Structure formats: C-alpha cells, structure tokens
Amino acid sequence: VTPANLTITARDQNKIYGDYKDVDGALLPFTVSGLKNFDFVTNADLASTGAAATANVGDYDITIGNAAGFGLSNYNITYN
Image (tube, rainbow, N blue to C red; front, side, top):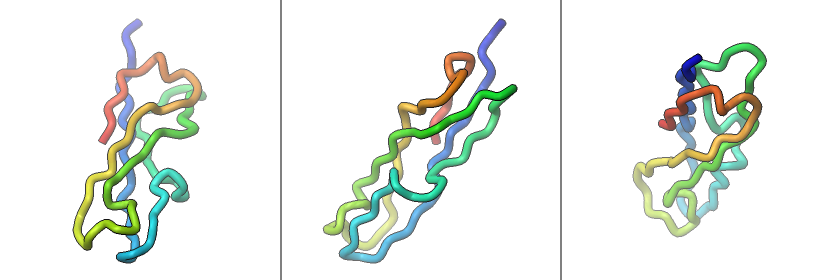
C-alpha cells in the first residue's frame, strides 16, 4: 500500500497595521485536501513575519507545517 497525497494550505489572513495577529489562533486557519476514510487534521503550526505588531504594510507569506491529527502517517503531506 502506498501513501495517499494530502495537501494542507494556510488560509489568507488580514490584520491592521500596529495590531498583532495570532495566525495559529484564527478560526480554521488552513484547508485540507485529500483525506480518506475517517482520518483528520486537528492542527498545524503557522507563522508569519507579518504577524508582529511592528510589521510594515505589505504582503507576507504564512508558513505552515507539523500537522497533527489521526492517520497522517498514511499520507505524503504537501504544505502550501
């Protein structure tokens, strides 16, 4: 049996200049595509240099990784 493909994608987020944004604390901060059976993803680590209150106005990448859940050893996971 070979692993299935699973893609976990960080959702776009916005904030106001001068505010701190907890990218991990957002409601449904990521989407998941490719889960099978009753497997699930409970959380993943997200980070962005744009989250700091001191971040200048602009676009920043959100990095995602270290997904946790049930059955994830059965997948080749790609993070976007």
